[in-house]
Length: 110
Image (cartoon, rainbow, N blue to C red; front, top):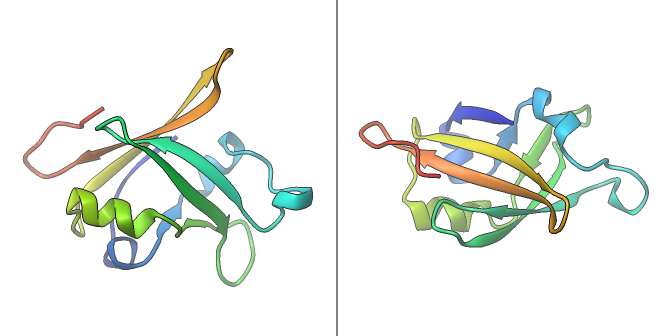
């Protein structure tokens, strides 16, 4: 879906999703109009429930807040570290998202 370097705000508060990732996410309709929960597996195999919602000020800006800071702290992420967000579609288990982390001196852990 996307690869991006984290900003200070993303390390301290919320992950801002690129607009290009919107078509790959579930629709924000009906009961999900204001937010959806994405089950995301990290590079260690831990399943996380990230709450994705429309950003402040409206528009099509999306952010992940819930559980994001716990993820940042558990991975000891800093501004400038890179995250890669992937979508896996499985006929049996459904859609699962994955997230990997890359630091300046590591390889992308997936």
